[in-house]
Length: 632
Ligand code: COA
Ligand code: AMP
Image (tube, rainbow, N blue to C red; front, side, top):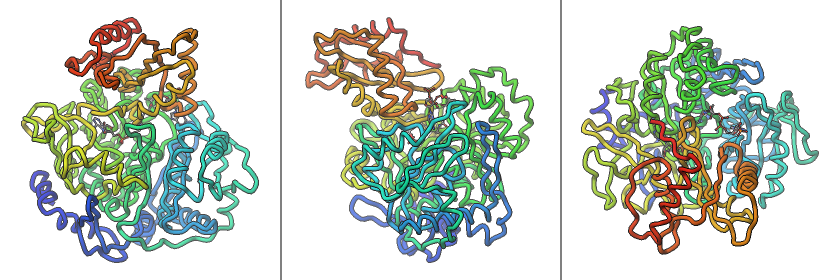
């Protein structure tokens, strides 16, 4: 392929031809007849094509010389286990679990929820669904019962596939009480639960409802991959939006497989046979694309790591994994690097591990501050590549495409547009923003293959949330600046979505919980900058008249409520009482202005503000509470 500028232009100007050529690298049952096609608001990729993603990720490699190569290495410092699966072994497990699903009556087009920690069974369950055309929806283990219930009601699954628990450093999290509560709360009723019993966190199964994974697998027959249309959905993955209800991002099969294979080679610069490690979780899009599907579609070895960057057992654990399993590319979130830096600022642990195979460190999920970028570059002595994407895209949209050519690295920038994504920075009127001026990141339609098809069961929300603001463009929800060399700098979300330790969360969802407290008249939850996690949520609450509750007591109760409704991953640890909140004359809380005050940024006095004096009160409150830590 040509170098970056020419091939990128080709991917935009000759979109269909360019991607049809990329698609031809896959082993389709039937080649597609069309590149991109439009139906109203929707674009579809590779109509006429028939394929199976699990076949491409496993059977294809077994039949083409990789049967004995490791497909997956499960490395779990929290249990002390390391387990290797060759492509043949993983294919066999997946085929058998697909047989289990078939025996429970699941067929193409059904949905299944997967609620599992970072164990191989999670990947096996995902791939088994893909094998049958069952649409999976993985729910992150750090979400509470209520969040699981919301997703059950939205996805309407026939089956819930889960494990009995997860392990957070040393804390054992029992999943069964969470599952029981979620199933109780959900109005949609599930036929069966298939539960993987973990010896480390055993759980009680309920007779008649729950079936033991191992027992079913012992007698299961392997199921063959089912021929699917390129446009059939592969999975739904819920992500936070600006309301209390998460959005089910729907991904197709054909565009997804084509895009991920392309990205492994040209974005990440790995070849089949290389070891690739995304230190994320299967509950997030990074885990879907780069722990499970991407590396396997490309014939790589993928690492599934059940641990944290620190304390499992020490801040050298990432370097140990890279060294031991010969990792070529590590992908993680900047927060993980900040956590390591905090515990081991001089990089002492790194000295024990030569890491000769490591070629690149990729970072995404949140803004990477320059200090973290520089620290990692010096410590690892490899190029550190910040790149930008979203659950919606499923794969990178801005990057330094090292598989084509390593462009000069500019710390603070997430790079240049990736093939297929025509990325623009627009002003409020929808015109191109001047160079070096902040604007709104928008992408000219159609998006590249692999990007979302719609929001599950809610085409209207898809249209309203992404397409309405600038006709002909997809609104990404981020602000950005383009410099004179065409590099983009992401300046943060333009809505109320926040990023906490690389986890995307909705402040609206937390506000719903906080507002439900009997003492609270109204509230605002905003994300403020945090030196470790990038952002953390903070609640500002106004009490109902006549309520008598100590603020410390109230804070404790609110923290507990958010923890048990949204989940510990929300990291909601602060709630302060305010006399009143800044609002517009029409009653809208000025969250963005509050955020700017907390982060010490300049802001314009909103012309619609009801009473400007409130901003002074809020500023004093924040100062009083020692809030607002800009980390640069
Ligand atoms: N199941 C149950 N609980 C979970 C969980 C899971 N899968 N994941 C996180 N939690 C809990 C944590 O135990 C913690 O609980 P606590 O409040 O009782 O301590 C809480 O949710 C917050 O978790 P986290 O934000 O991960 O903070 P942490 O202090 O435990 O760890 C880091 C901080 C930086 C080490 C950690 O966030 C990290 O490794 N981040 C990497 C980011 C990442 O992988 N992002 C994915 C996108 S690329
Ligand atoms: P998620 O859907 O969880 O992947 O979160 C996507 C959001 O994370 C984006 O819209 C951005 O706000 C943020 N994000 C992801 N990668 C980056 C990055 N490299 N730099 C800045 N923000 C990022």
